[in-house]
Image (tube, rainbow, N blue to C red; front, side, top):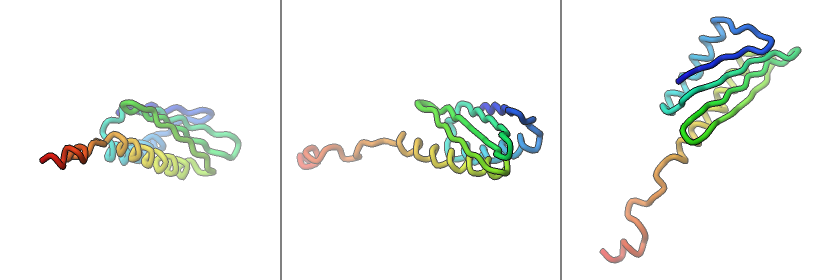
Length: 108
């Protein structure tokens, strides 16, 4: 998983970088096929805003959160992305029934 962190009116400190990495490791535990992640952190007066885009095979997942505290915004963002990844993972499952159509089951 390639992680790209960008700060807009904000310098990315090593503590913030480590916190983001620890939170996004939870997403990679649920879904191994995350190609890359782009995270943008910005400060607008009092609001701390975090946006992220996950590139997974067949889809791009995007989420954004705003809070007064950057760490809680990151927490909310990873929760949103985790739900989106789980939903994407469920959609990738096999939708075919194991026995086939009902008319083919009656022939046997």
